[in-house]
Length: 197
Image (cartoon, rainbow, N blue to C red; front, side, top):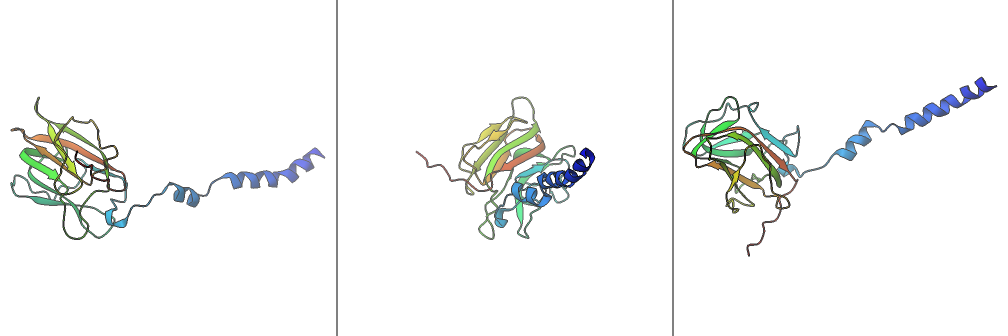
């Protein structure tokens, strides 16, 4: 009698277990987020951009004082790029910034404005001679209005609720600053420029 009763309950037990397993489609939809396609980022992680030794540097122009552009991959067909000048080769990292050199995302007056969707924080790992630093400026338009800040290598600089759309890294050291990696994390939308007091 007991064996018969257990066999009757087995289908009910299996059905209840199956109903508790979440389907893969429901899990994917709950963890996804949307970013406007005009500011969508590379598909591997829409809120992260990492530039390091694995990035293809075949288009970089070294040792030139004029401004050049580095196209970056985007989900959309619109171009998204960085501008740079006075950079050197660095095969073990991303690039070297020479004296008066810089790397930034420029504001443009056509298409999208090449703004990143609200930069949350930036981490730059670099090597420099003792006493020299890599500098950071940022803003909500092409003027990079916030005062220059010296970055410490490997230490996150957090923008908190400011979420600017533009950043600029530059060097004023007579010796090159060797950048191993740049990691930018994004909020999803640009913040509002603080009012000056």
